[in-house]
Image (cartoon, rainbow, N blue to C red):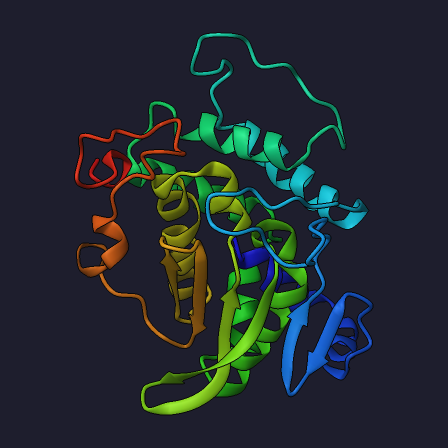
Length: 270
């Protein structure tokens, strides 16, 4: 789902330049690090510890994106909840983050791993004008500058989905560059509590979309011990079978869809 970040970069060059210069009201630039001031309602201003759900105070911008994605995904979601109760139809701006995650859970109902990832791809493509991937490839060939630019844009435009993040230095093919994004505690993983949803509805389809559609390699490495995640633009993702995430067990204590008897999350196996 990171694609919207870069789509904004294609469309609003002046705003992106302002962000890089530190004029964006939600950005902090400290010691060369770009980070975002999310609407975290915790007293510390930081995500809650592992096992506790972080409190957020979402504004108009965040709710607009939640609504946009949720309504697009509703077309692919089951019309009833897992317990068989009908889903209440929502109007514009009736969505919050929990209902956005709920739509994601209904999308995976009755779909295997590949089908779930295909839904995300179709949702992302539906948000772009015709020819956008080709335009992106022309504007952002896989250079160091393109990787660093996309990392910078990811921070302010993606906090609504994943929470606070910052641009970090990484090494790509032996070269150090600031094309990494460290997500402190992924809001999507935290609220879904589901390894399979993290991998099938975010990590893999986002990697594939950037790498295959946009021609800009991207690797996402979630840390399931603290729910952080590292994104590295310019680094090609490994095959699914070689990815450590493909062998991750369920969050047995917090995932409502978990199978504690399986050594690997069942949603990663089918």
